[in-house]
Length: 48
Image 1 (tube, rainbow, N blue to C red):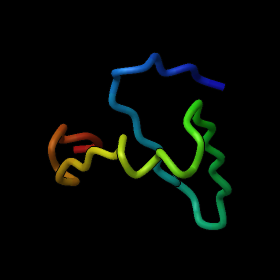
Image 2 (cartoon, one colour):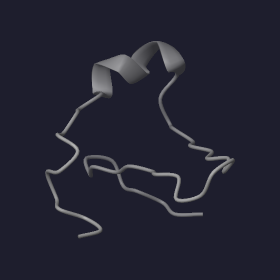
Image 3 (spheres, rainbow, N blue to C red):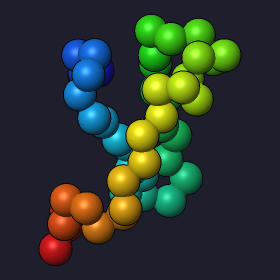
Image 4 (cartoon, rainbow, N blue to C red):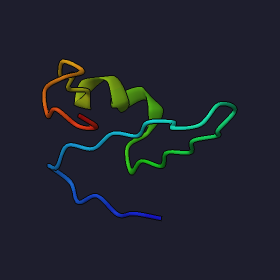
């Protein structure tokens, strides 16, 4: 388990087929969309 403090960007990515990813949030589902920020998939150039 990894704790990401409030205000930091985070993401999860499945690296294997049929993986199950679980994400927890301190926000109720009704507020999640207000806290959503999207980046282009190549923004950080990971896995090059």
